[in-house]
Amino acid sequence: MVKSQTLKINEIFYSLQGESSRIGLPTIFIRLTGCPMRCNYCDTAYAFHEGKNLSIDAIIEEIKQYDTNFITVTGGEPLAQRNCYSLLDQLCSLGYNVSLETGGALSINEVHENVKIILDIKTPGSGESENNHWDNLPLIKQKDEIKMVITNQEDYEWSKNIIQEKGLYLNYDILFSPSFGQLEPSQLADWILQDNLKVRMQVQLHKIVWGEKKGV
Image (cartoon, rainbow, N blue to C red; front, side, top):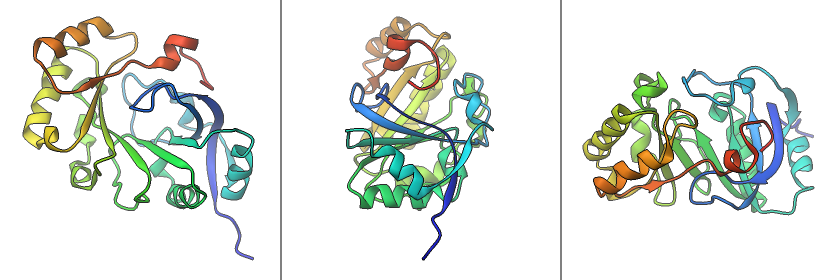
């Protein structure tokens, strides 16, 4: 018998999807421990180190208790653990509708083709924009989404320029998200409308409903 691969898991929980085009859908979240980046606005610093080792078999047994087909694998940075790819493969083989939230510093080249990737492009306000792995952009599929967290007007203008320079309007669904507690959503909405920017603005639904805390 082949021994099941293991991952360090920070938490597994059932909640409403708070972001992306799947916002509001009941979803199982699998949060992996560890991240190579330290974004200034990070709201999951507890996932840098906290967690327990679980086999992929044990993870799958745990998620079976929830009656939904939607799963989001997140972090931290889930791709920082090599066995994340095997987890994604197995979830897809079981017929789950899987999305992956990745910070964009690591290659998505080996991610299963059926996974919906939410790729974060780090803005200057994150403090991590120098670590964007631009080679990921040609790997993005039509169903995937690109996310930019906006902390201020400088981030907004930078993001507009990136969209133009990289030709992101041509193929991708682009999400602009105001950094929680740093930028008023109404301000970002005004900028988008003034510029007639072809992006999807999103707010973090889970924080509006439950506040900023774990397990939501």
